[in-house]
Length: 99
Image 1 (cartoon, rainbow, N blue to C red):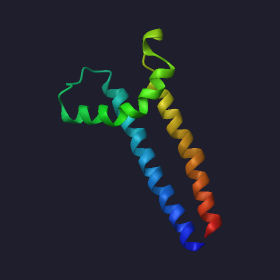
Image 2 (cartoon, helix red, strand yellow; image 1 turned 180 degrees about the vertical axis):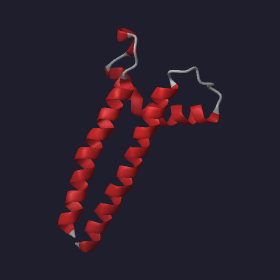
Image 3 (tube, helix red, strand yellow; image 1 turned 45 degrees about the vertical axis):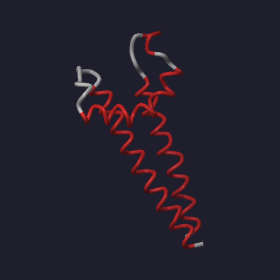
């Protein structure tokens, strides 16, 4: 069971790093949306391609045209924080019990 505990711990750590990166990408995209970014810039294209799958489900829930403001990054950040607080901590707890 020691090896399984280490595997769960490693997976939880990697998932935590992925969620931290997604968190920062959503924040950067929200900040860059306040200015008029060049859509042909490679960094802007990378931000849009990586964050759009995260933001699209929240845009369907709360369309921006109804209130005139896109609040999908706020909901995405809340979901990411929830995943980090609940799922990651649960996986770490499981890994500790298996070790």
